[in-house]
Length: 50
Image (spheres, rainbow, N blue to C red):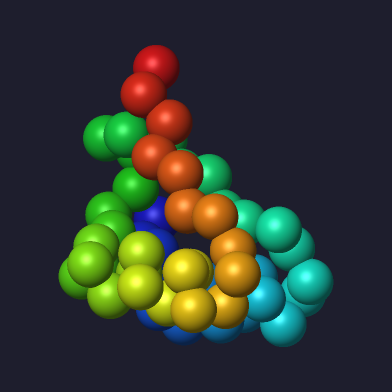
């Protein structure tokens, strides 16, 4: 699976509070942009370490 800025926008549109992904379980496209988008939209973005 892949997570990017569009994923964060979709989570915001769905009125979710944030996005959690598992470390080594997904590819994050442009982590800095994803974190910035989540912050701007008031969402959390958490990389869970098993």
